[in-house]
View 1 (cartoon, rainbow, N blue to C red):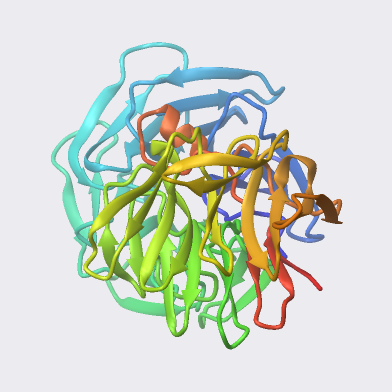
View 2: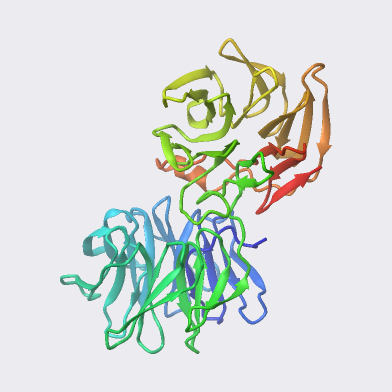
Amino acid sequence: MSPFRGTNGIAFGPDGRLHVAEYLSGRISAVDLATGEIEVIVPIDSVVQSPDDLAFGADGSMYVADLVPGRVWRRAPLGEYTLVSDEVKAPNGITCVGDRLFVNEMRPGGRLFELFPDGGEPVVLATDLAIGNAMQAGPDGHLYYPHMLTGEVHRISPDGGTPELVADGLHSPVAVRFDREGALLILTTGAEGEITRISPTGRRHVLTTGVFGLDNAAVDDDNRLYVSSFASGGIAEVYPDGRIRQIVPQGLVGPYGVAVDSGGVVHAADHYRVAGDQTVAFTHGVAADQDRLHTTSQYGEVRTDGKVRTKGLRCPLGIAVRDDVLVIAETGAGRIIAIDADDTVTVVADGFHEPVDVAFDAEQRCYVSDEQGVHRVEDGRPVPIAEGLVAPQGLAVRDDELFVVEAGRHRLLAVDLTTGAIRTEAENLALGPLETVPRALVVHGMPGCPRGFAGLAVAPDGTLHVSGDGAVLRIP
């Protein structure tokens, strides 16, 4: 289990510690690489919502790219926050060159700016970036930055001019760094965890680290290389031959929905992927049906074994299988929908506030968790069967009982489907926060999951599985 829910931008601070941005958790921490001790520097209740990259100025100030709301912040050495700019769309790559600050945009057609923390209009240095990301000034004084979509690295003078192509033929380059020997290091996001090293003479060498979802890198004064992973968190040192030493362990970034297949294998929807899979595929809900796996995505998609069944939904979350039909809680639309074998979408029920999960009993009756209660669907409308709950989320049926994760009270409830009696099955569950950074995606007009989601599943042997805070909990 990792203390981080995915690790993104990393940079050494004036105190010598490695500072780590967590996009999903909305916080920044400092890691003592000698001891592994971690201190939260920017907590989740600060003005920063979704830090994706960071850099330090000459005076020790920390500059933060706050991706989702589109803001760039300065955190002074004494902890005071100042808004540098809210004119950058999807700010991500950020770097300081002496007293100068540069930021690029993580979007097609993005721009590269010089920003002025003490005031002044932003200056656009480059346009048409095919999704920018982590960048750095090279030994020649130029700014080097990736184009993730086209697999290229470009450079430009910090004073402007025409960008130059430096390297191409890369697979989704996510970060550009330089080591102490002046070699260019280019991180890519694939399952192999490749880092392309280009020496000052132009010789290429590829390191294969095996770190899935590489995100960023930092080099210390002794030329040791450290990397982060957006998909599995942790901090690792990379040796010259590609071997790694894990300093902060990897772990789950969620998880959200959970399912157990007929063979007893647990599948956790872990935001960027189904846990264990080495393919980036955004997932929040998951259901297992014989040898098939069905998932929902924060980007409005429903997939079966990776194949898109439908898209354009408003934050689909919980998913269940009834015969050959997928039934989904479309949270953002306040309704329950069904997708048949021909991928035709129909509305099963509406009139909900924010439905989160769905489940079926032995008689194929549909149950839905909503903001404050659990409902049974009758004639296309919700009928309450358990009210006054605080954030009921994951649902599952075992025999004649409906189990509900009451996330707001960190407990698991059982509802007798015959008598309606409610009992507590488990308490003090280690669940994730109710409010998560993805809610900001909705607030700022980007698709995303509007709340944390503690999933629930029943295994073939009857044991219950709850997605918790960085882990899946098994309840006999």
